[in-house]
Amino acid sequence: MPFTEDTLDFLALNRVMNSREWFHEHRAEYEKLVVEPMADLVLELAPAMAEIDPAIVCIPRVGKSISRIWRDTRRGPGLPIYRDVMWITLLREKYIGLPGYWLEFSPRALRWGCGWYQTPPEVMEAARELILAGDVSWEAAKKAAGQNRGFVLENEMYKRTRHPDAPAEERMWLDQKSLCLTHDEPEVTLLYSPRLAERIAGDFRAIAPVYRFFIRAWERAPKG
Figure: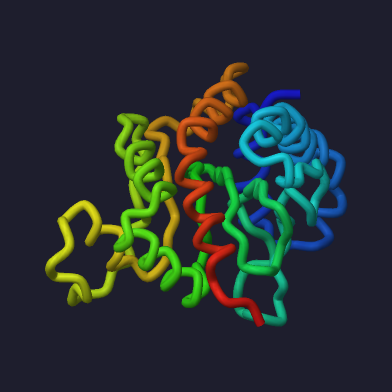
């Protein structure tokens, strides 16, 4: 089933209620309005992911490709129990520092992209080495990232450049603390479109060279 306005209304209300009792009373709504559309989207994106990288795993279940709605309160007991932000992650394997594709939505925003939430330092160093060497994977990534599809690098850069002699376009990547290419959709209502999966799949294919550059950096970085 598709996402609807009720999907975002449920996320907002559930966070406001902030009650395990309320959530369990409305569990069926959560499954119907949030989990089922997310699972359908994962399945619709799976063919494009297989084209990009057959090793990418698309499992339409909570805790796999679909995020959990509840927080681990051990990490922040003062935080709300439930999030109003949900996301899909599509990558080879969790927890080993791999880059992946993702989509995130909430009542306030709709965004998607490719990269890391926090790039391991050794992978960042490997990526910089590839950029400075003019590696073919970097050249392809640079070209793909420059297409007019609304993608930008998450802008968390060192205040002072470590590569003053590099061209400005390369410094923008070299000076990042982490690498993630992101599209922020101006209208969250696109979430309700029957062509949502088609749009996301098209964007994911378009930035596939960026993903492959990220994978090349991960493969080049020392392990263990």
